[in-house]
Image 1 (tube, rainbow, N blue to C red):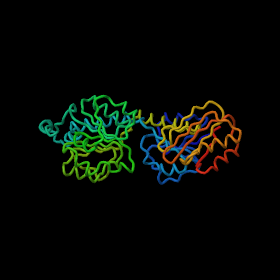
Image 2: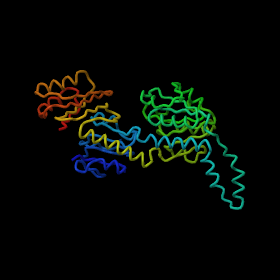
Image 3: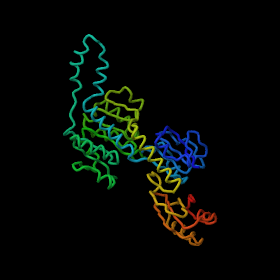
Image 4: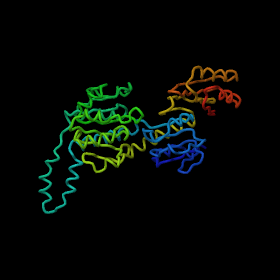
Amino acid sequence: MYKVLKLNKIAAEGIDSFPSDKYIVGDDISDPDAIILRSFDMHLMEIPSSLQVVGRAGSGVNNIPVKKLSDLAIPVFNAPGANANAVKELAIAAILICARNIHRAIEFVEESENPEDFKQRIELGKNKYVGYELPGKTIGVIGLGAIGVKVANACLNLGMNVIGFDPMMTVNNAWELQPGIESSDNLSAVLKKADVVTIHIPSTNETRSFIGKEELSMMKDNATLINLSRAEIVDDNAIKSSLTENRIKTYVTDFPDRSLVGMPNVLLLPHLGASTKEAETKCAKMVAKSIRSFLENGNIDNSVNFPEVHLDRISGSRLSVTNQNKPNMVGQFTTCLGEAGININDLSHKSMGEIGYTLIDVDKSITPETLLKISQIEGVISIKNLN
């Protein structure tokens, strides 16, 4: 039986993906083979020695000690794209709310408490909240991954001029963009042109304060900035200065900081990006599938720290090896198997950064002596016999 520790509430559809005859899933599991979570912060958590895999039912993994787990040969899976539609819809909602000043207009109505002149006050005051229509306005989409592409396409369909910025855009994502969307490799040019800027990039050391004082100074005075990615990507101090000095019109973020609460021209959301039943279900099911595929067959799908390796399993025994990314590692594995009289039916090896990962299907069971010999090869981090 495999044991799965659940650190957050996970959609039932995802938990139900683990068959009860093979898996025990719970909130209080000792010596787990796998951990499944959403927002739980694992950085201060002691990693169980039994742990083989971690699955995040979402896309961002900044709450997971990825480097530490990589050193322990533990892959970290996420659910890229599963929440893309939910975040896209929230981005469109934010654009419309800001364009029509809906957030400010609602506050105005709620503050108009005098019942005697209520209607007159509302009618006279509405001129303060005149907005603009989207056709013809320009939006800069920073990051053209699964979410950014959907946002860009939706904005184009609303009649907006769309400029995308993503030097690392994949070929597959490029194919998903609708004709008419402009691509730019110049961030400054995008910021200067855009009436709305929306950010959809991951949080990394390189993207910390990606939008700071210099970038904000390039934006139009009446521009809207939307951050549905991660808090660290936008410098909060720079945002506060820009808003105070009226250098941008509105800031929308899904990651509120206490220092921003009560500031005018700020729309704070409580991390609602993926908070739809549909997104939570898709994320849970996707990551549960990845966990199962790894534990049962050694396959690596949607990992942030391991290479993608998937091998269809037909018959025989299977060996998985995690190693340092060094020359001639696979050759040494196959030599050990050959010397033991074991034929290889199929093999797949890929590397990612400092990690190499190999799946080997063989025609008969691998003896403990052969496993030990392979494990003692310099550079081998972990080896598993998947019968």
